[in-house]
Image (cartoon, rainbow, N blue to C red; front, side):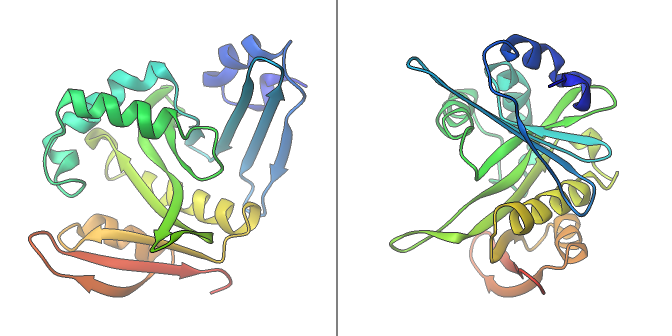
Length: 219
């Protein structure tokens, strides 16, 4: 197999594993997006790679080298305004990066590093993660989330990312329902969810209030 089917951002990584891994399985969705899943098993380690690509974005597993960009995102007051409410201290950001993003990277439901292909830059994260309910997670449901650096706002990237993961969730993962949550003041994210076909199902009032959205497969 050849790495030239993927974005140039991935070629150094693919070259490093080329001699150690089995050929990837590729799925072409009805929307023309490419998904590559590569796994390698040995007595010493398990290697898993998630790649999803749209016209302008590439989604992959988080790497240790993403740490500084992630911490910068978490320290940005404007980015965090509707996602957490306040900048996150570096110590906490580092711990969350290691315990949530790196630890869960190989799972089928996880937040993915989002790369803007034009400049090969990490601009934030997006993806699907398990929808936890009392008693555990719902196996056929997931939560959609996205968070990008401010300089990439207003370009339709959240809609592009959301559409890619909705398609991936329903077509490749067989999900029945995808949910999302947005701060009631976050008009931009609310518009994105509405464009993707989500409907508001509930409002949670409090110090910070939220709208709950859902999208059902086939709707």
